[in-house]
Length: 191
Length: 191
Image (cartoon, rainbow over all chains, first blue to last red; front, side):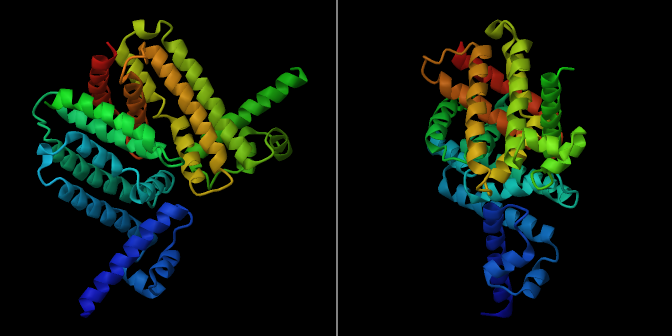
């Protein structure tokens, strides 16, 4: 591989390892050294890519969030023409996997750590805006109509809450029923 | 004060201090010793009431959750006869204060700590059922009708998600608009 590609591959291995590490061990158990070992990368190489612990973990959450956004758009190439309930379910799925778990650890740690807080606040705002944009697009929501913007926002808040409910136990069955019902309620506002 | 009352007052001081400590410093910064000092109670007395760290913090979250439930019922003595939007706003408020912050820290810590996990899972299920019961009661929701149960559940999931969105920044203005819109959507199902 050319040097530039190798460097890029190393970076991506570190980012993926960082998200997995956060999801499994939380912020307290997540250091650059642990992630470097998990990724099979030297500590020095890891620090070359990410000088600080904060750099590594915020970049990791952002990278995986972008990957998921791209995958979500690809799932519904026709947007609103697709099954709206399936779109709602896919939006909710953003909040039930290892990425959400990792982001949640970072989020909660940021609430008590001054070094982390501004970085994570800014990251969350950016990821939140992008998720809102995708939701509006895939649902075919016309935000110029009254109440539509708030309805989509509430849906994403609900998705986040469902992710939290899934943290300690598998909440899949209940979640499916809630998603079905709120997809129907949503249709009343969007159509 | 009689001995029994003194003991009870000590216990309550410890519980209140434990919730404040969790909310401010997270699980990693919350030990029995730190809480005892904050409450002005000897370490030995604290351990008499709560033999383990897990005992103290799960009891604290449960105690404050019960206090809040009682306060919420008292706010709306007439239940569904009251303003439904105000009921939704009060339910959402359950998830934006220091109690939610404390519970969230405990919740996230439990996802990585085997000692804590079963205790918190059981506690969350109990508090969740009680909150659902109160919501049904205050909203005057008839759960024998199709979709009503899932509508109320989704509302509480949204409330939890709004709490998370409020963790790092004051999200009050956006929250108020979302609450208004979702209260209107809710009315379509409940009436």
